Image 1 (cartoon, rainbow, N blue to C red):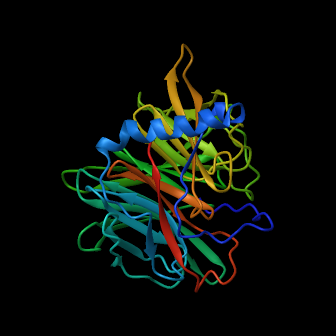
Image 2 (spheres, one colour):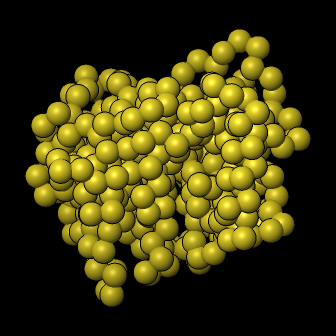
Length: 341
């Protein structure tokens, strides 16, 4: 998250009229078939989707959103780069209230709702003067109480996280390692942080450009990362940090990436192949690890450089970071509803 490619000249301001497009590998060949495929894809999953649902959900002006997570149901949580607040509400009603008030110098990036114990985990940093410390917070999802605030020594740019039964795994975009904080759901106790260096085929970073970004679990318990600098998808063995590239068949290629989201064997890569879309891939096992097949992309007129996405109510919801927009401290921000695979 928090990566920015300059906006192409002439990009129109997102309009309120919805124009959801499913881009498939066959789209370049037959336009008429594309329209039919998009319509059919929508019909397949409409029965499990909550309806009606708003096309967009407005967020407070100037919030500078980065991470989004959801649960239970269609309750959402969005974190702020501007002041580290967390806002919450319901995606179907479009409501919004403050869960965690802002604090000077704090910036939140990745968020993850832990269904087991009703907390939101958040990663980011606190800047005092010219020094920024990396932090991982555990916040009560109902009261906003900060239950834990873990300082991560040597952090460069803590970016995203995923929560397992026993640990929180965090990417650091400027240090080639995963930060691990072990926790106990029953007692809400925790220990760490400890670190797992990324090795094997992982493309080492230079400590300046953002490298590892989004993180999620693969169906077998391994970890999948994307890479904002060189693109691609990467499979990591959690215990050792050994990394291999996940081959991707079809499509325009995964050239970047911000947040990741998974639904079984479906992987959503925010801005994996374009600044105004969410790439959709289908994962499959092989003799040596996982592979991925391009299954299209989700885009919409209202997308404006999305950063992360979450699944709720049968829909995919992408928060628009609007990186590079003029006057980020005062402009409007929103979440865009997209069809899930």
